[in-house]
Image (tube, rainbow over all chains, first blue to last red; front, top):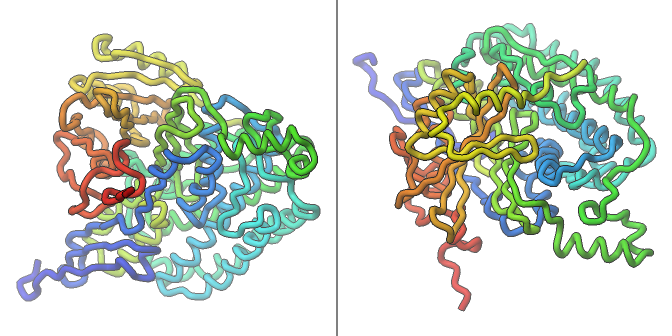
Length: 391
Length: 160
């Protein structure tokens, strides 16, 4: 520390546009250099794990959307797959493919939002207008199939809620066809932009050892060169049937993580195209009256279906006694659900392993010794959602 | 193109390779292996799993409250080996009062926040943790919300 200055404690947040929610970062500054950086979380704690213990499995589902509100379907997917593993059931192929399509659309939508806000944090305003144009199209597609835009809640335990409307698959195909072209617009604005490069290259470098030690996952881990993707390493939903590349970075800096996420969006569009090409006909949910809801039309006309519907709403499903852990590759990293069942219709304990919570830990490590302005780039590069950090 | 898939054979090999007296029990449910370890052996087993068997990635750490059973708290660790795509669940009972198990934050830095969260919400103490403070709730908060005897409605809820 120089003799002429004294250390300054500065609170970044809890309310600040670049904290992406209510996050307080206490930074100790020597001039503009960060000496110590301490993230303070917990402003959004809503007790989702506690709430789930008093609800049936189906009632838990809408809560999971809210964990990471930019990637609703990805969280639904993690939860329904964990419950299905607990039950020991497999969903019909059509439901599986529809889930993959929705999950990958969610990944694109989440990454678009990240790109918009990350670039905005660093002073580039234009990408936001471009990415939100595409994100809006995705939202319309979510709305058309599920009724909800931010919280689609389209998946159900044992399948999906309903079949897709006419013309929906063509609309998704059209989006995926034009999307790579649109991505060139973003790249033109940023990838070779000298300001963007100076603000991101060499900032927040993470080594492979640090990634493993901090338990990082998702694009943050892949930016450092670890080809760790749950879709590949422990395939679920039939991801091993699709041809896609897991992009990795070389230097583990903010710029590499940016490139990794861009490539992931292209790969997601590829996966969606393949899923659309092979979309099988058939059931959209398992034909088990103790697990899946009957079609709505039957509920109004058949007494058996009405009883089945009533029993599922009132009492829910009863998985066997046991415990499972299921992880999925959410847009922000590895999302894990650990569910303990005591054989009743309500989960005994649910633990959500959210990617943002774990990834945020490394912020201090990355920020210390850097300039204050880099802190803003670093919060953006982790791609956190504070609801995902605090639950 | 096919995925690499999960290696269950490797997990079975690992469990066989651990010191027999440390592994109190083992179960397999839905293809996932769980081993039960005594709290006194936890650090030794975890060190061996990390250094010898390549479980470099601590996915998650949490506890389950079996109130009113005694001992009531079971601490659960999920470990992953990148090289073999192997998932292993390690469990230990916190038998002391107040419930306490040794901290693994010296082995995996990521355990730091996980243990703080577990302490905050369930009141498990992690002996040897460098900074065991609440993480989500304010320092002045009373009780631990994820305990089974903590009312969902909040601590000062009165039915009368």
